[in-house]
Length: 195
Image 1 (tube, one colour):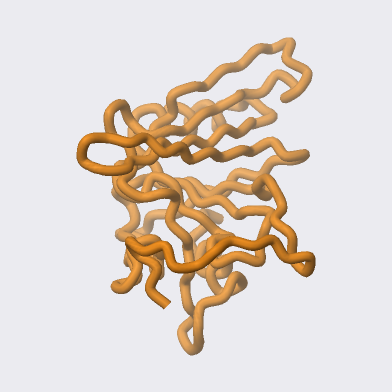
Image 2 (image 1 turned 90 degrees about the vertical axis):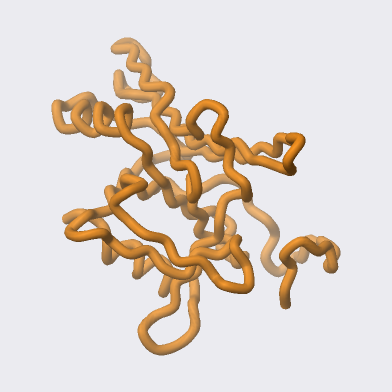
């Protein structure tokens, strides 16, 4: 069913799988130029493929106790709707390796994949920064901050004046044989994670 540029279905909350707030304590981040995206030809809101350019990898950050958060905000412009995307996350540590990753995120554009706690949707897995990428705008560390044990509080968001033309894209990647499922999409992402 095509829903692009149409409102043709109502919204209802079911008791079998009620909507659950938040995202899982994992985020996948990769350099914008290191991967090519394939979109569904009938619906540009669906990413059907993520392909590495050369030997590029996706980096997996794991947190605890709801330490990650995302937001997508509509901004009406004279040329149509645009979306500001943000991802807030914490890193409980301040090693040289972490600082190196923070420096890299501060200089380039990245994209990020998150997994919603509500997995009964076709948007259970979402990609942020699909068109314009994300940049690290905040990287704050207070040694006395007990909430992250002296680690970093980070924010990835769109570059100035470069909002996204669509809300976060759904990631739906099919296995070699068969149709796309939550499990096949997650497996495709994990296969690209740096070891």
